[in-house]
Amino acid sequence: MRTLETLVLHGSGWLEAMDASGVQAQPRRPLPLPRMQLRLSRSPADLRLVPQASGRIALWRHQPAALRRTVDGAATPADLAPPAQALFTLEGELADPQGQFLPRVFRVDAGGGAGHALRLYRSSAGTVFGSEGGLIGRVRSAADQPVPWALLTLVVRPPMAAPLTYKAQADAQGEFRLSLQRLPPGAAASTVYPATLTARATAGAPAASPDPDAQPEVDLRTGEDADPAWAPELTVDVAPGRVAALTSPGQGALVLQLA
Image 1 (cartoon, rainbow, N blue to C red):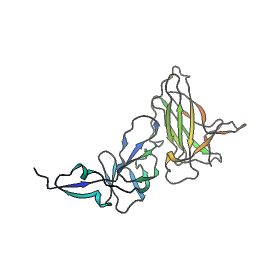
Image 2 (tube, rainbow, N blue to C red):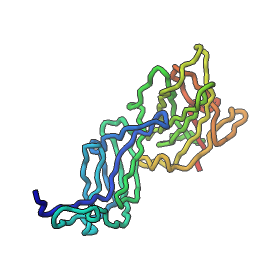
Image 3 (cartoon, rainbow, N blue to C red):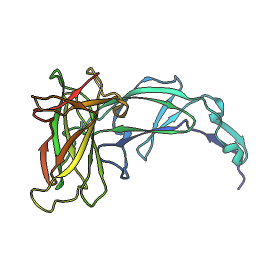
Image 4 (tube, rainbow, N blue to C red):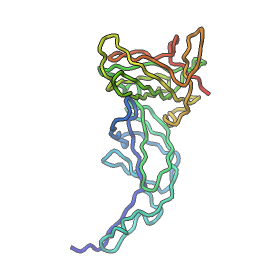
């Protein structure tokens, strides 16, 4: 059989969504991005979004013209080599219509065939506690106002085991839930593991979360009412198998010091 011509198409990259909540340093499957609400606020006029069976969304453009061309006969490896592409800015908002994940805005330098993973964190409604237990709470500022979209990182250090890192994000009202998957069970009902907590947060209350991981680090309240103090991290005890409230010492909430 003789090939008369070959149509050669090159994409400009792709977007995918990832569940970034809970225990870190484990393989994660992409979330089905085409099922979510993706709204672009800045993109090239010739950009086309094409849903893929893998759950990604491919980025297709008409420029440069070499992205789509017809080659006489069978294509050679040189014909299939992707052309040079200038990067372009892609800005938008991603939301889960089912409410299992919190919304976020994003900004990426797309193009050149590269992919970009948009990290999403589970909402309180989308967080399930297992036998390992978890933490619940609300995030407030020093002025006793809700801190929306705060990103919390908890590092638990069980004895005789490697440290485990967990992440959770507060919602628009400052409420959060953190599930302690893969936490080793305690030898007794009174077992607690030492842990440290750090936080990232942005002053103000945007409609959707900024890039959660790009928020600035903030201090947490560590002192009692009689001797208030602030520090980059808070030392806490975690009880495996129990669901407990995570608060600053002597407070009814987790209190952050915003810039």
